[in-house]
Image 1 (cartoon, rainbow, N blue to C red):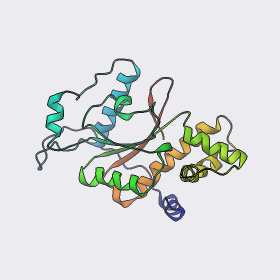
Image 2: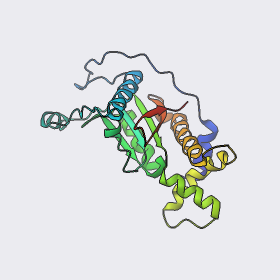
Image 3: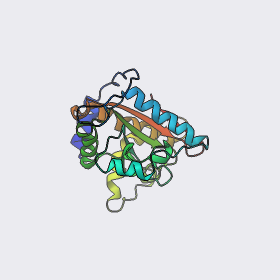
Image 4: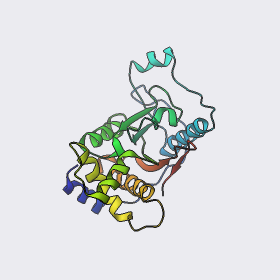
Length: 223
């Protein structure tokens, strides 16, 4: 993402959208299910995560009937913007199946125009009510950023984009007590959330941020 876009989004980031109360999911005018409320969508994600973390996942929506139904169209209930880390696959972390989630993954959940366009597709075209930005502990992209800031060695090739996008969060949190990597990941995840919230293309959706714990398997929402 260009630096001027980062500056614009940082300057115009707004507060959280109000989450509507849970409601029923009737049939929409296009023949597919009407999107659930953001609250209901978030509740389903967290309930699925608790099943995953407790070792009792349901592995829903994986059979041939579900696959044949989805061949005619998709109606995911949440967009997850997450990291490419192989230990954090959203469908498993949230115990969801085919057609449930629209997952957009980059190293360190870094934003660029392709990511934003993908989120817009989910919100505007598929009418997804919830966008969740998911960070996680011990992120390799964060570690690479901190190493670069410590030793100043140039970052090779395309990895420079990742460092450029995560470095502002690292610099803001460098003086805080405790784990610099954890502070950086949290600050960066919140910034991505706020950048998406600030974009008028996504006003129809509730945008939240969360942290995945590699040790416990649990997802916790970030304030």
